[in-house]
Length: 276
Ligand code: FES
Image (tube, rainbow, N blue to C red; front, side, top):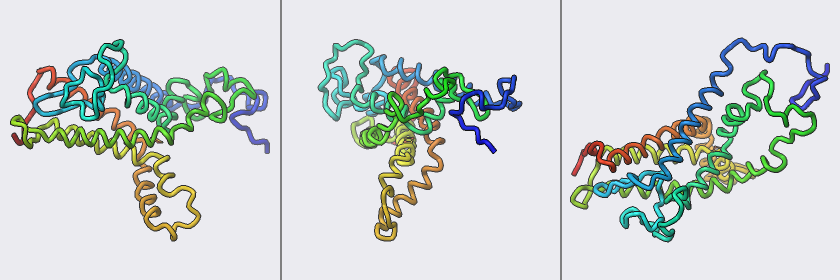
């Protein structure tokens, strides 16, 4: 029996006039993903470039879209990592310019997001048993997957992971700072809780990464000789089964956290205070 592969020339495939024989709603996943991702990217781009409503002085709430805040335009208390970037840069340079490009690279090269945007934006393919739209994939011999430039750059994911882990530490520091009361002492508000929920889920996303799993237990010939790494690998493997959920949920918590900080900073409503 002849086996048909993705790269097989069209003449080797069964000749079916219909575009696909699938009758279920296979298009709902790529369409929903396209709408959600597009809306998120527009929101995140606008917010990162606004240059306002990113910091609540009274409670030390800093939105993750501006962390670490390293522009000379950042308030002193929001800039724990220094203010070394001039404040007269073009509007499209965000205040958190040392973290956002790496976080973007981290998400763009994530296995989960690759699957999502290959299906939803590039339509290569949109779903199983639905033909590709890409002219490259349709041309026999031209498709090289992720083995050549530019898609071989997806292999940089493991390096983006290291930087993303460092940025998660910065986000954790921001959440610790959010235990700030009106009188300058200890305090807790709804914003503190939102920042903590967001950072815990960000850690869930970062630690459940496939690269993290490989760092913990990859290239080991004998688990019994490395019990600590084996234990870590086991825990990360459990988290890893939920990586796609963490990827999606953290998109939501990032936007919600930013929106909450922005509305409180703007004065649209007051923070709900639980203590001081
Ligand atoms: Fe998704 Fe690494 S595979 S963050």
